[in-house]
Length: 475
Ligand SMILES: [Zn+2]
Image 1 (spheres, rainbow, N blue to C red):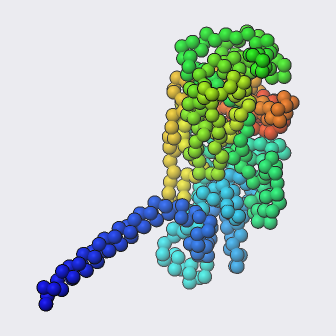
Image 2: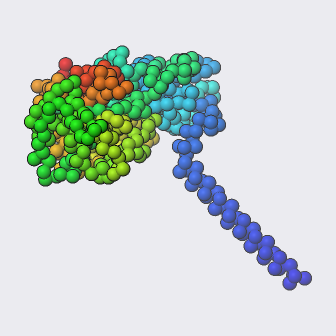
C-alpha cells in the first residue's frame, strides 16, 4: 500500500519544496528591491504610504548651513501649514511642497516625511494626540550670500549660482522671476498660464538653456590647448574687427571693436570674436565634439535638483558656418548656468569636478544625525596642466580684459564674460559672467546671467564683485 503512495508523497514534497524555494526567493527579491528602491518608492507623489506618513508625522524643517530655518511646518489643529520665512528668497532651490513638489522639498521629501524619534516618544505623542516631528535637513545654502545674489539681480530675469569649488557645496542659487512657495496652491493656474519666457516656476539656474555667448570661448580655448599643447603660445592673429571666410561666414567683434595684434591670451582676455572664429575653424570637429561630452554636454548631470541637459553635438559633418558660430558661443550652442558653474569649478579645482551638494545632514527631531553627506569627487573634466592654462587665461580677463570691474585690493579673481545675442539681433544680449576667486587657491565660484540687459562686463561682473566681496567679508 505504502509502496504505491510513496512516490506521490515524494512528488508532493518536491513540488512543495520547489514552491517554497521560489516563494522565499521572491520574498528575498522583494526585500532587496524595496531596500534598494526605498527612496524611489517613497518619493512617488502618488504613493499612499506618503499620505499615511503625512497623517502621522509633521513635515520636518529645511535649514541653511548655519541653522537658519528656510522652511518648517506647523499643525493648527486640523491642517498642517508649511511656512517659508524668507518668502521668495529661496523659491526655486528650496522649492514648494505641494503640486508635485520641487527643489529640496522634492528630492529630500523622503527624509522630511519620516520621523526617526524613538518608539517611546512616538507612543507618548500618540497618547497626547500630537503628530511626530519629521526629520529635518541641513543644506549648504548661505542665507546672506543668497540675499546678496538675489538683491543684485534685482528686478531682472536671470540666474545666479555660487559654489564652493573644493567641496561642490552650492552656497546660493537664485532664479528670477521668483515666487512665494507658501502661495503656490492659490497661484498655480496663473503660473501654468505663463509663457516659457516669463515662467516663474522654471529654475533658470538649472533648467534654463541660454546661448552661452563668449563664456563658451572657455570651451573653444580648452580644445585649442588640447590640440596644440606645445604651440598655443605661438598663436598670432591680427583683428581688424571682422572675420570672413567664404561667402557666408562674416563674424564681427563686439560693437564694432578692433583688437589689432593678438596672441592667444589677448584674444581670450579681450574676447575677440574674429580671433576665436579663426581658432574655431582650425579645430578638429570630431575631437571638439568629444571635449563637449567631457564637459558634461548631452549627458545626465550629478544633480538631485530638477534640471535640463544641455545638448550640443559637433562632429565632422558640421558645416563651416555652424562651426564659426559655435566657436564664439552663438548658433545652436546653449548651456545652463549650473553646467557652466560646474565647468568653472573643475577649472578652479585643478581639473576635478566635485559633485554639486545641496544637503549635508539629515537629523531627527532630537538633532541626532541620521545621514551625512561628504564632499565627493565626480570626475576629472580636464587635465591639471590644462586647468593651469585655463586659470591663467581667465586671470588675464580680470587683470586686463573684459572683467576689470572685478579687480579688488582684497583678493585676486579670474573669469570670463559673455554678451550672448538672442533674437538674431546684436542689440539684444544676455549678460554673462562665470569665474572664481582667489586665483592661486580658488575657494568660491560664481556664475551669473542677466537676461536682455547688455554686456557681461557692464552688468554681470559688478554682481560677481558684490557676491565675492560678501564671501570674503569685504564691504
Ligand atoms: Zn577682435
